[in-house]
Image (tube, rainbow, N blue to C red; front, side):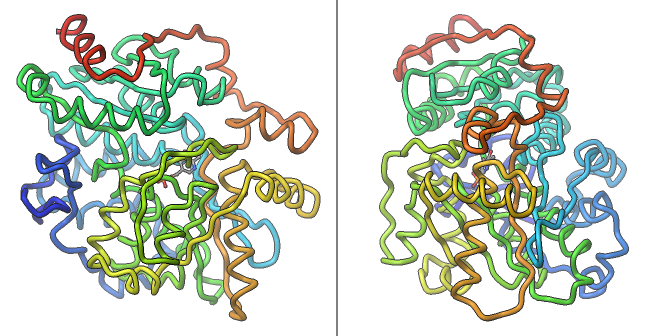
Length: 432
Ligand SMILES: *Cc1c(COP(=O)(O)O)cnc(C)c1O
Protein backbone atom coordinates (compact mmCIF):
# COMPACT_ATOMS: atom_id res chain seq x y z
CA UNK A 1 0.00 0.00 0.00
CA UNK A 2 1.32 3.42 -0.96
CA UNK A 3 0.67 6.57 1.03
CA UNK A 4 0.01 9.76 -0.87
CA UNK A 5 -0.05 13.36 0.28
CA UNK A 6 -3.41 15.12 0.11
CA UNK A 7 -1.60 17.72 -2.02
CA UNK A 8 -0.57 14.93 -4.41
CA UNK A 9 3.08 15.86 -4.76
CA UNK A 10 4.50 13.14 -2.57
CA UNK A 11 4.13 9.39 -2.54
CA UNK A 12 5.79 7.03 -0.07
CA UNK A 13 5.41 3.92 2.09
CA UNK A 14 3.79 3.63 5.51
CA UNK A 15 7.11 3.70 7.37
CA UNK A 16 8.10 7.07 5.93
CA UNK A 17 4.57 8.42 6.24
CA UNK A 18 4.60 7.65 9.97
CA UNK A 19 8.14 8.86 10.61
CA UNK A 20 7.57 12.14 8.75
CA UNK A 21 4.05 12.92 9.90
CA UNK A 22 3.60 15.77 7.45
CA UNK A 23 4.48 15.49 3.74
CA UNK A 24 7.07 17.86 2.24
CA UNK A 25 4.39 19.53 0.14
CA UNK A 26 2.55 20.45 3.35
CA UNK A 27 -0.16 17.85 2.82
CA UNK A 28 -1.29 14.98 5.01
CA UNK A 29 -0.65 11.36 4.15
CA UNK A 30 -3.55 9.19 3.04
CA UNK A 31 -3.56 5.54 2.01
CA UNK A 32 -3.71 5.32 -1.78
CA UNK A 33 -7.03 3.48 -1.43
CA UNK A 34 -9.15 2.40 1.52
CA UNK A 35 -8.81 -1.35 1.96
CA UNK A 36 -12.00 -3.44 1.86
CA UNK A 37 -12.83 -5.97 4.55
CA UNK A 38 -14.54 -9.25 3.69
CA UNK A 39 -18.21 -9.67 4.59
CA UNK A 40 -17.21 -12.69 6.64
CA UNK A 41 -15.08 -10.56 8.97
CA UNK A 42 -17.84 -7.99 9.36
CA UNK A 43 -20.46 -10.63 10.13
CA UNK A 44 -18.18 -12.28 12.64
CA UNK A 45 -17.46 -9.05 14.59
CA UNK A 46 -19.52 -10.05 17.66
CA UNK A 47 -17.24 -13.05 18.15
CA UNK A 48 -14.00 -11.09 18.03
CA UNK A 49 -12.09 -9.33 20.79
CA UNK A 50 -11.05 -5.69 20.56
CA UNK A 51 -7.45 -6.85 20.04
CA UNK A 52 -8.40 -9.25 17.24
CA UNK A 53 -10.32 -6.49 15.49
CA UNK A 54 -7.41 -4.08 15.95
CA UNK A 55 -4.93 -6.53 14.48
CA UNK A 56 -7.05 -7.28 11.42
CA UNK A 57 -7.83 -3.62 10.66
CA UNK A 58 -4.25 -2.44 11.26
CA UNK A 59 -2.89 -5.21 9.05
CA UNK A 60 -4.94 -3.90 6.13
CA UNK A 61 -3.19 -0.53 6.37
CA UNK A 62 0.29 -1.79 7.25
CA UNK A 63 0.60 -4.80 4.95
CA UNK A 64 3.97 -6.51 5.24
CA UNK A 65 5.78 -3.47 6.63
CA UNK A 66 5.81 -5.03 10.09
CA UNK A 67 5.86 -8.74 10.98
CA UNK A 68 2.62 -10.16 12.40
CA UNK A 69 4.19 -11.03 15.74
CA UNK A 70 5.44 -7.48 16.29
CA UNK A 71 2.12 -6.01 15.24
CA UNK A 72 0.20 -8.35 17.56
CA UNK A 73 2.42 -7.38 20.46
CA UNK A 74 1.94 -3.67 19.72
CA UNK A 75 -1.84 -4.01 19.42
CA UNK A 76 -2.09 -5.95 22.68
CA UNK A 77 -0.03 -3.30 24.48
CA UNK A 78 -1.96 -0.39 22.98
CA UNK A 79 -5.41 -1.83 23.67
CA UNK A 80 -4.83 -2.96 27.23
CA UNK A 81 -7.88 -1.13 28.58
CA UNK A 82 -11.60 -1.50 28.05
CA UNK A 83 -13.72 0.45 25.57
CA UNK A 84 -17.27 -0.34 26.68
CA UNK A 85 -20.46 0.90 24.99
CA UNK A 86 -22.46 1.91 28.07
CA UNK A 87 -26.20 2.43 27.86
CA UNK A 88 -27.31 5.92 28.96
CA UNK A 89 -31.00 5.43 28.21
CA UNK A 90 -33.25 3.85 25.58
CA UNK A 91 -31.28 3.67 22.37
CA UNK A 92 -28.50 6.03 23.43
CA UNK A 93 -25.07 4.60 24.24
CA UNK A 94 -21.84 6.18 25.38
CA UNK A 95 -18.72 4.61 23.90
CA UNK A 96 -16.32 5.22 26.78
CA UNK A 97 -12.98 5.86 25.17
CA UNK A 98 -11.41 7.18 28.37
CA UNK A 99 -10.19 4.12 30.23
CA UNK A 100 -6.56 4.50 29.12
CA UNK A 101 -3.65 5.94 31.13
CA UNK A 102 -4.48 9.64 30.62
CA UNK A 103 -8.25 9.05 30.52
CA UNK A 104 -8.92 10.52 27.07
CA UNK A 105 -9.54 8.86 23.72
CA UNK A 106 -6.25 10.21 22.41
CA UNK A 107 -4.52 7.45 24.35
CA UNK A 108 -5.57 4.99 21.64
CA UNK A 109 -3.95 6.92 18.78
CA UNK A 110 -0.94 8.16 20.69
CA UNK A 111 0.01 4.79 22.12
CA UNK A 112 -0.20 3.15 18.71
CA UNK A 113 1.76 5.93 17.03
CA UNK A 114 4.52 5.89 19.67
CA UNK A 115 5.03 2.16 19.26
CA UNK A 116 4.96 2.28 15.46
CA UNK A 117 7.50 5.10 15.46
CA UNK A 118 9.75 3.26 17.88
CA UNK A 119 9.52 0.17 15.66
CA UNK A 120 10.21 2.01 12.38
CA UNK A 121 12.92 4.35 13.72
CA UNK A 122 15.06 1.31 14.58
CA UNK A 123 16.64 3.04 17.55
CA UNK A 124 17.78 6.17 15.64
CA UNK A 125 17.41 9.41 17.66
CA UNK A 126 14.31 11.42 16.85
CA UNK A 127 12.45 14.52 18.00
CA UNK A 128 8.70 14.42 18.17
CA UNK A 129 6.84 17.74 18.00
CA UNK A 130 3.26 17.96 19.26
CA UNK A 131 0.97 20.97 19.57
CA UNK A 132 -1.90 20.43 21.96
CA UNK A 133 -5.05 22.17 23.08
CA UNK A 134 -5.19 19.85 26.07
CA UNK A 135 -5.42 16.13 25.73
CA UNK A 136 -3.16 15.30 22.82
CA UNK A 137 -0.03 16.30 24.66
CA UNK A 138 -0.59 14.13 27.67
CA UNK A 139 -1.56 11.11 25.62
CA UNK A 140 1.51 11.61 23.42
CA UNK A 141 3.75 12.12 26.45
CA UNK A 142 2.38 9.00 28.08
CA UNK A 143 2.79 7.01 24.87
CA UNK A 144 6.42 8.07 24.36
CA UNK A 145 7.59 8.38 27.96
CA UNK A 146 10.95 6.62 28.35
CA UNK A 147 11.04 5.36 24.74
CA UNK A 148 14.78 5.24 24.02
CA UNK A 149 16.08 7.64 21.40
CA UNK A 150 12.89 9.71 21.17
CA UNK A 151 12.63 13.22 22.62
CA UNK A 152 9.20 14.81 22.77
CA UNK A 153 8.41 18.56 22.66
CA UNK A 154 4.90 19.52 23.61
CA UNK A 155 3.65 23.01 22.71
CA UNK A 156 0.60 24.12 24.66
CA UNK A 157 -1.23 27.46 25.01
CA UNK A 158 -0.45 29.15 28.32
CA UNK A 159 -3.51 29.53 30.55
CA UNK A 160 -5.80 27.79 28.07
CA UNK A 161 -5.68 24.23 29.35
CA UNK A 162 -7.24 23.02 32.59
CA UNK A 163 -5.01 22.76 35.70
CA UNK A 164 -5.14 18.98 35.58
CA UNK A 165 -4.43 18.93 31.84
CA UNK A 166 -1.42 21.13 32.50
CA UNK A 167 -0.15 18.73 35.14
CA UNK A 168 -0.57 15.89 32.68
CA UNK A 169 1.57 17.80 30.17
CA UNK A 170 4.31 19.14 32.37
CA UNK A 171 5.16 16.59 35.06
CA UNK A 172 6.85 13.82 33.09
CA UNK A 173 10.48 14.95 32.97
CA UNK A 174 12.98 12.67 31.23
CA UNK A 175 12.49 12.67 27.46
CA UNK A 176 9.34 14.83 27.61
CA UNK A 177 9.69 18.67 27.41
CA UNK A 178 6.73 21.02 27.82
CA UNK A 179 6.88 24.36 25.93
CA UNK A 180 4.37 26.83 27.35
CA UNK A 181 3.41 29.24 24.55
CA UNK A 182 1.88 32.64 25.24
CA UNK A 183 -0.76 32.31 22.50
CA UNK A 184 -3.67 30.19 21.30
CA UNK A 185 -3.78 26.57 20.24
CA UNK A 186 -3.71 27.72 16.62
CA UNK A 187 -0.46 29.55 17.35
CA UNK A 188 0.97 26.35 18.81
CA UNK A 189 -0.16 24.37 15.78
CA UNK A 190 1.36 26.96 13.44
CA UNK A 191 4.66 26.88 15.36
CA UNK A 192 4.73 23.09 15.20
CA UNK A 193 4.23 23.23 11.43
CA UNK A 194 7.03 25.78 11.10
CA UNK A 195 9.40 23.65 13.15
CA UNK A 196 8.61 20.57 11.10
CA UNK A 197 9.18 22.32 7.81
CA UNK A 198 12.29 24.29 8.82
CA UNK A 199 15.24 23.34 6.68
CA UNK A 200 17.96 23.93 9.23
CA UNK A 201 16.18 21.97 11.95
CA UNK A 202 15.53 19.14 9.54
CA UNK A 203 19.19 18.99 8.62
CA UNK A 204 20.24 18.69 12.25
CA UNK A 205 17.58 16.36 13.55
CA UNK A 206 15.10 13.73 12.54
CA UNK A 207 11.86 15.56 13.26
CA UNK A 208 8.38 14.25 13.28
CA UNK A 209 4.90 15.29 14.24
CA UNK A 210 2.63 13.64 16.77
CA UNK A 211 -0.46 15.65 16.02
CA UNK A 212 -3.61 14.16 14.61
CA UNK A 213 -2.00 14.82 11.24
CA UNK A 214 0.06 11.65 11.69
CA UNK A 215 -1.57 8.76 9.87
CA UNK A 216 -0.54 6.45 12.74
CA UNK A 217 -2.99 8.28 15.00
CA UNK A 218 -5.90 7.70 12.65
CA UNK A 219 -5.53 4.01 11.90
CA UNK A 220 -6.16 2.77 15.47
CA UNK A 221 -9.00 5.23 15.96
CA UNK A 222 -10.95 3.28 13.37
CA UNK A 223 -10.75 0.10 15.52
CA UNK A 224 -13.38 1.18 18.00
CA UNK A 225 -16.03 1.86 15.39
CA UNK A 226 -15.79 -1.83 14.49
CA UNK A 227 -15.70 -2.70 18.18
CA UNK A 228 -18.96 -0.79 18.72
CA UNK A 229 -20.63 -2.99 16.13
CA UNK A 230 -19.21 -6.02 17.85
CA UNK A 231 -21.03 -4.89 21.00
CA UNK A 232 -24.24 -3.41 19.56
CA UNK A 233 -24.95 -5.21 16.28
CA UNK A 234 -27.22 -7.59 18.21
CA UNK A 235 -29.72 -4.75 18.74
CA UNK A 236 -30.54 -5.06 15.05
CA UNK A 237 -30.90 -1.33 14.37
CA UNK A 238 -29.00 1.17 12.24
CA UNK A 239 -26.10 2.72 14.16
CA UNK A 240 -25.51 6.46 14.21
CA UNK A 241 -22.28 7.89 15.64
CA UNK A 242 -22.01 11.36 17.09
CA UNK A 243 -18.39 12.44 17.21
CA UNK A 244 -17.36 15.50 19.25
CA UNK A 245 -14.98 17.11 16.80
CA UNK A 246 -12.09 19.56 16.85
CA UNK A 247 -9.39 18.55 14.39
CA UNK A 248 -11.71 15.88 12.97
CA UNK A 249 -9.25 13.01 13.34
CA UNK A 250 -11.72 10.89 15.26
CA UNK A 251 -14.39 11.43 12.63
CA UNK A 252 -12.01 10.79 9.73
CA UNK A 253 -11.10 7.44 11.31
CA UNK A 254 -14.82 6.63 11.39
CA UNK A 255 -15.06 7.49 7.70
CA UNK A 256 -12.21 5.04 7.07
CA UNK A 257 -14.15 2.34 8.94
CA UNK A 258 -17.25 2.95 6.86
CA UNK A 259 -15.31 2.93 3.61
CA UNK A 260 -13.76 -0.37 4.69
CA UNK A 261 -17.26 -1.81 4.70
CA UNK A 262 -18.64 -1.20 8.18
CA UNK A 263 -22.34 -0.36 7.72
CA UNK A 264 -22.43 2.86 9.75
CA UNK A 265 -25.79 4.48 9.10
CA UNK A 266 -24.88 8.12 9.77
CA UNK A 267 -22.14 10.32 11.19
CA UNK A 268 -22.86 13.42 13.20
CA UNK A 269 -19.97 15.84 13.54
CA UNK A 270 -20.81 17.72 16.73
CA UNK A 271 -18.85 20.87 17.43
CA UNK A 272 -18.79 23.65 20.00
CA UNK A 273 -18.81 27.30 18.90
CA UNK A 274 -15.91 26.52 16.56
CA UNK A 275 -18.21 25.89 13.65
CA UNK A 276 -16.20 25.95 10.41
CA UNK A 277 -17.33 22.48 9.36
CA UNK A 278 -21.06 22.90 10.08
CA UNK A 279 -20.82 26.18 8.17
CA UNK A 280 -19.07 24.49 5.29
CA UNK A 281 -21.82 21.87 5.03
CA UNK A 282 -24.43 24.59 5.04
CA UNK A 283 -22.84 27.04 2.64
CA UNK A 284 -20.28 25.02 0.66
CA UNK A 285 -17.61 27.54 1.65
CA UNK A 286 -14.77 26.56 3.92
CA UNK A 287 -13.64 29.51 5.97
CA UNK A 288 -11.00 28.96 8.66
CA UNK A 289 -11.46 31.24 11.65
CA UNK A 290 -9.47 32.03 14.77
CA UNK A 291 -10.36 29.50 17.47
CA UNK A 292 -12.85 30.45 20.17
CA UNK A 293 -12.43 29.38 23.74
CA UNK A 294 -15.17 27.11 25.11
CA UNK A 295 -15.73 24.69 27.98
CA UNK A 296 -15.05 21.78 25.62
CA UNK A 297 -11.59 23.14 25.01
CA UNK A 298 -10.04 20.10 23.33
CA UNK A 299 -12.27 21.03 20.38
CA UNK A 300 -11.34 24.71 20.23
CA UNK A 301 -9.96 24.51 16.72
CA UNK A 302 -10.54 27.16 14.06
CA UNK A 303 -8.90 25.36 11.15
CA UNK A 304 -9.25 21.60 11.58
CA UNK A 305 -6.20 19.82 10.22
CA UNK A 306 -8.05 16.73 9.04
CA UNK A 307 -10.41 18.73 6.87
CA UNK A 308 -7.89 18.16 4.11
CA UNK A 309 -8.18 14.40 4.52
CA UNK A 310 -11.99 14.50 4.52
CA UNK A 311 -11.90 16.64 1.42
CA UNK A 312 -9.79 14.07 -0.35
CA UNK A 313 -12.14 11.24 0.76
CA UNK A 314 -15.07 13.18 -0.67
CA UNK A 315 -13.29 14.41 -3.82
CA UNK A 316 -13.67 17.98 -2.64
CA UNK A 317 -17.40 17.78 -3.24
CA UNK A 318 -19.65 19.21 -0.54
CA UNK A 319 -22.61 17.13 -1.68
CA UNK A 320 -20.57 13.96 -1.08
CA UNK A 321 -19.77 15.26 2.43
CA UNK A 322 -23.44 15.86 3.11
CA UNK A 323 -24.38 12.29 2.20
CA UNK A 324 -22.30 10.94 5.10
CA UNK A 325 -22.16 13.71 7.67
CA UNK A 326 -24.59 15.94 9.49
CA UNK A 327 -22.83 18.63 11.45
CA UNK A 328 -24.12 20.87 14.21
CA UNK A 329 -22.58 23.49 16.46
CA UNK A 330 -23.63 23.98 20.11
CA UNK A 331 -23.07 26.71 22.65
CA UNK A 332 -21.52 26.34 26.09
CA UNK A 333 -24.91 27.05 27.61
CA UNK A 334 -26.53 24.15 25.73
CA UNK A 335 -23.62 21.94 26.72
CA UNK A 336 -24.07 22.76 30.40
CA UNK A 337 -27.83 22.19 30.31
CA UNK A 338 -27.26 18.80 28.72
CA UNK A 339 -24.73 17.77 31.36
CA UNK A 340 -27.30 18.64 34.03
CA UNK A 341 -30.19 16.93 32.26
CA UNK A 342 -28.34 13.69 31.56
CA UNK A 343 -27.11 13.56 35.14
CA UNK A 344 -30.57 14.23 36.60
CA UNK A 345 -32.57 12.04 34.24
CA UNK A 346 -30.20 9.11 33.71
CA UNK A 347 -27.59 9.46 36.45
CA UNK A 348 -24.78 9.52 33.86
CA UNK A 349 -22.01 12.09 34.11
CA UNK A 350 -20.93 13.44 30.73
CA UNK A 351 -17.80 15.52 30.30
CA UNK A 352 -18.33 18.70 28.23
CA UNK A 353 -17.09 17.03 25.01
CA UNK A 354 -19.39 14.04 25.44
CA UNK A 355 -22.23 16.47 26.17
CA UNK A 356 -21.68 18.19 22.81
CA UNK A 357 -21.90 14.76 21.16
CA UNK A 358 -25.08 13.99 23.10
CA UNK A 359 -26.61 17.21 21.80
CA UNK A 360 -25.76 16.09 18.28
CA UNK A 361 -27.73 12.86 18.73
CA UNK A 362 -30.67 14.76 20.17
CA UNK A 363 -30.77 17.17 17.29
CA UNK A 364 -30.47 14.39 14.76
CA UNK A 365 -33.34 12.45 16.31
CA UNK A 366 -35.56 15.54 16.14
CA UNK A 367 -35.02 15.63 12.39
CA UNK A 368 -35.22 11.93 11.73
CA UNK A 369 -38.08 9.52 12.25
CA UNK A 370 -35.91 6.42 12.02
CA UNK A 371 -35.51 3.97 14.84
CA UNK A 372 -31.75 3.96 15.39
CA UNK A 373 -29.12 3.28 18.01
CA UNK A 374 -27.22 6.48 18.79
CA UNK A 375 -23.65 6.17 19.97
CA UNK A 376 -21.84 9.19 21.31
CA UNK A 377 -18.08 8.97 21.54
CA UNK A 378 -17.28 9.92 25.12
CA UNK A 379 -13.77 11.20 24.55
CA UNK A 380 -12.70 12.11 28.09
CA UNK A 381 -13.44 11.10 31.65
CA UNK A 382 -15.44 13.88 33.38
CA UNK A 383 -12.76 14.17 36.05
CA UNK A 384 -10.38 15.53 33.40
CA UNK A 385 -12.58 18.63 33.35
CA UNK A 386 -13.33 18.63 37.05
CA UNK A 387 -13.65 22.44 37.42
CA UNK A 388 -16.31 22.74 34.73
CA UNK A 389 -18.14 19.55 35.66
CA UNK A 390 -18.35 20.38 39.37
CA UNK A 391 -19.45 23.92 38.69
CA UNK A 392 -22.16 22.82 36.27
CA UNK A 393 -23.46 19.85 38.27
CA UNK A 394 -23.00 21.61 41.61
CA UNK A 395 -21.54 18.51 43.19
CA UNK A 396 -18.17 16.95 43.85
CA UNK A 397 -17.05 14.25 41.47
CA UNK A 398 -14.62 11.53 42.30
CA UNK A 399 -11.11 11.86 40.86
CA UNK A 400 -9.74 8.48 39.76
CA UNK A 401 -6.39 7.50 41.24
CA UNK A 402 -4.79 7.55 37.76
CA UNK A 403 -5.46 11.30 37.51
CA UNK A 404 -4.81 12.14 41.14
CA UNK A 405 -1.24 10.87 40.72
CA UNK A 406 -0.51 13.72 38.23
CA UNK A 407 -1.83 16.36 40.62
CA UNK A 408 0.76 15.42 43.19
CA UNK A 409 3.70 16.07 40.84
CA UNK A 410 5.64 19.30 40.17
CA UNK A 411 5.09 21.33 36.94
CA UNK A 412 8.15 21.80 34.70
CA UNK A 413 7.84 23.94 31.57
CA UNK A 414 9.80 26.41 29.41
CA UNK A 415 7.88 29.59 28.52
CA UNK A 416 7.88 31.23 25.09
CA UNK A 417 6.05 34.05 23.33
CA UNK A 418 4.54 33.07 19.95
CA UNK A 419 7.87 33.48 18.21
CA UNK A 420 9.22 30.81 15.93
CA UNK A 421 12.83 32.06 16.00
CA UNK A 422 13.00 31.79 19.79
CA UNK A 423 11.58 28.30 19.81
CA UNK A 424 13.93 27.34 17.03
CA UNK A 425 17.02 28.55 18.85
CA UNK A 426 15.91 26.66 21.94
CA UNK A 427 15.71 23.47 19.91
CA UNK A 428 19.07 24.19 18.27
CA UNK A 429 21.01 25.31 21.32
CA UNK A 430 19.72 23.47 24.30
CA UNK A 431 19.08 20.08 22.78
CA UNK A 432 21.72 18.99 20.32
C1 LIG B 1 -9.05 15.90 20.89
C2 LIG B 1 -10.35 15.76 21.55
C3 LIG B 1 -11.53 15.87 20.82
C4 LIG B 1 -11.55 16.18 19.34
O1 LIG B 1 -11.04 15.13 18.56
P1 LIG B 1 -10.58 15.41 17.04
O2 LIG B 1 -10.09 14.10 16.55
O3 LIG B 1 -9.51 16.44 17.11
O4 LIG B 1 -11.76 15.89 16.33
C5 LIG B 1 -12.72 15.69 21.50
N1 LIG B 1 -12.75 15.45 22.81
C6 LIG B 1 -11.63 15.36 23.55
C7 LIG B 1 -11.74 15.12 25.00
C8 LIG B 1 -10.39 15.49 22.93
O5 LIG B 1 -9.30 15.40 23.65
